[in-house]
Image (cartoon, rainbow, N blue to C red; front, side, top):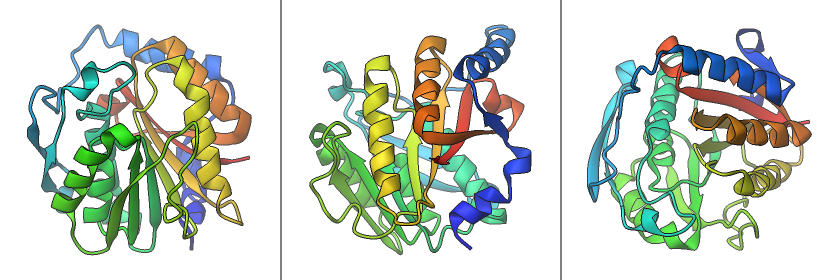
Length: 258
């Protein structure tokens, strides 16, 4: 059974998204009704090295991740430090891998990996092959984190420019099962590039059975709506409810090509 088939069996517990405006209205009504309750800050973006505890029940572990806070001072750069969403998504995968998501056969590509937390967590959770990708500017810190986090299985870092695709043929050398995106949209201008990159990865598999798992922190309703609107042009989109503590501040989506 492919990961695509596993997700298909869970759709009754997901929320189908067919209209971006309605989706954002529902999400942000919950967000604003939280009364300004502060979300837990799981990371310290000021440090060059941080220890991140991934709480996943029986699959809990700690990762030491290098950051480069200076990169985030550059125009258009946000990947030099960790963001809370990467911890949220890593913990979700950890919990699901204990119960019903077998990652051991999966070939996974992460887009916009930044410091690489999610991809390294998936590797530590037993994924067969993980490719973490980002722009050239991020390769140094990303590669170092991959080397420090290696365990059993295959993981490597590769350059992938959303606007140009990947020149590294090893990224899509094997049929991809899962593409992961963690909090990569901060401005409407990058939406078409990210969605285009997701399409490229998904179209690389002949049968089209590639699932995308996306986490997005709730910040700007306008940016979020632009992202969902663009996704709906090419993808079937389902929201994955997690729990009230997560859903008030973050959204998880499962997507696949129409």
